[in-house]
Image (cartoon, rainbow, N blue to C red):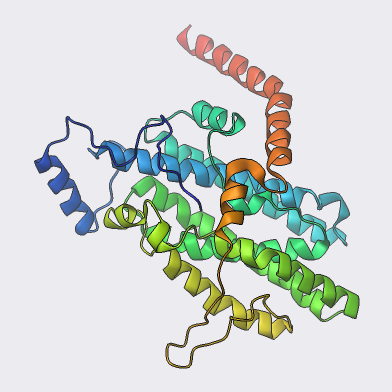
Length: 330
């Protein structure tokens, strides 16, 4: 997932709070190196807190925005069973967003502020969700590739140094595994079907392959935060390491389907056992992250409308909570 160089207050993430002493920072790093979990009430460097807020909130936003490409197919799924499975998956993603917003709130940022930043276009979410789902095969590709890349990114987060985030990720990863398998199952069925169905599956792979590789973020030499995040054990692997793991796992799966990844350079190196890959179009990645992707405006417009349409629910919930509090006080 793409990350910015500024925190949510517009301050440089690497900037150290002047009140933090070298002794405090050294003691904190010793805890990290000893694999201790940092909890919400523990002392932590301000830059560590800001990095976590940025990462967790962007992760939460991605889960919420990520409901839209699949919601596009809820009324058009080819069978009642497929509709029920897709509905369950979308419901899971809503839950993931709630877990993650809750984890971010333990760091002192309000959910209202995070949501406001998303709706205002200030906060980022994964670039992958700004691409359209044009055919039913795209729903399979999203599950197989997008959720597959998410799993590769997120399993190491179960060992993140920040306790509330790592614990939220345990359940999320279990559910993402189901999502990945349902996507692959869709493509298995299509590839065993008619020539037109298999061609549709190949077309989906062609369009989703490169954006899926971009999900891991810029190459290590261009990544602004990887080194510090790994030192703090927020991350456990670099962007390029995770991307390579994803390619090595996914290409044989494509071969099993009888599909070909759209990259002539993607051949296995007999010496390393890893698959090579061609150059990634990072300009496309920057354009999409900057708001100029195929569906950026549509995704945020839909999210703003959903938020506005839900005003009455929030008002009713607040009124009910106030009534219960008044009754308890009496």
